[in-house]
Image 1 (cartoon, rainbow, N blue to C red):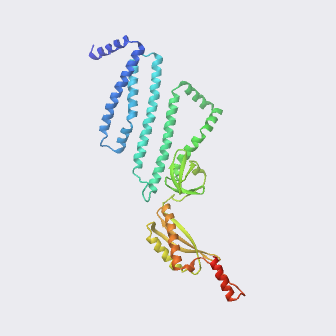
Image 2: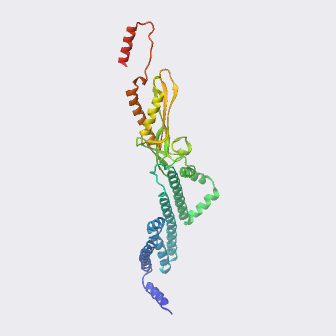
Image 3: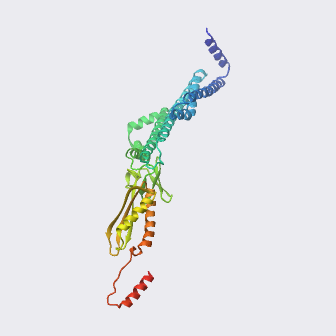
Length: 375
């Protein structure tokens, strides 16, 4: 008989002296204490092992501290359960609890690894860059698919936990076998969740919107600020927030101004007298655009688009790298062009002409003077 056998016999004799309840608690408490010590040593070893590794592995070990502790506790308590003087019912209950803990641990580790991977992956892209179309595409796709994966992990884990109970397992089998009214009720109850789930998958694949997209929805212009599992937050230009369900963007038409590129062409409509020199106006607009840091050096144009009864319609086109800069550039062009016309060509501003037939020139002149003063 060797030393290990003697130690085991001594342990069994010592346990046999104590009452079964006290002995079981003592064994389980000892196992938990040993588990804490093993967890601390294992975590230090893993931290030292990945110290010079990639950010993903360092983050995985750092965020897996609690799941690792739970895993060590499951092993320790499971081992102690075979040594403790438990009855058959107590052993079965302990095994059931450990099985549920193991399922929860698996889901916990899967969600942690998924979160770390998405975080590390998205660090490759910068949403604050000037041309961030690729970054917005990957950020939107990764976050939505990550949410879908989290929902699936939790759903599968919850179903696995429920299936460990005999009554629930039998009910689930009978429900699938019947496929009757109960199945229809369950389907209607899960319809909102499934609707958002499939809308999220479709949104991630087709990407009609992305994070920071400039959109026009419900008559409001703004940027997509956040995409969650159930709704989309649009930040309106005056800092209000428009909350829309996720399925809205798959079922209703809307405008996306940055679908393919963040660059936009802004238009300024002005109405001038027919006597304005168009070439001089065109040169001034080019000068204003060239002096502005908001212009992206791509498009600047001045066109007479319509003749009306008293004025002609002039359209000015200027381009900018994004919607916000395009709006500011349009305002700048309006302000500087108005100042230029007032200073250099005041007669080019819209005015109404009229002929007084059969009226003496003196009377007509006084009438026109009074009319101009009233205006």
